[in-house]
Length: 113
Image 1 (cartoon, rainbow, N blue to C red):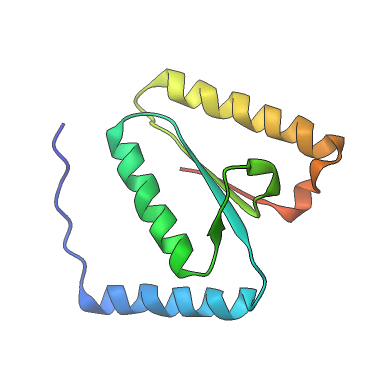
Image 2 (tube, rainbow, N blue to C red; image 1 turned 90 degrees about the horizontal axis):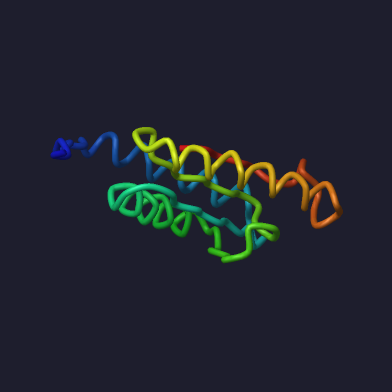
């Protein structure tokens, strides 16, 4: 499967930089952490690296431990059913641990891509 090359205008890049700056102002000096869990193919790995770079630019810090993250991103493949099933399992596992007192479920942003 070939991936289509996408051209992004300088105007769109500038808008993204403005969003990054706004988020940096919102989080201030607080050290917010993120965790990305990738399930699927090499294209998903590439997308996760891009997401990681964006979050780093916004001032977030990567953590291997999803239970201490403020943002958890599940990057999955919609073509492979096994990858989608893994996400549902991970969400259930995370819910159990957070409800057991690891952290408030209201303190985390969950993203499924």
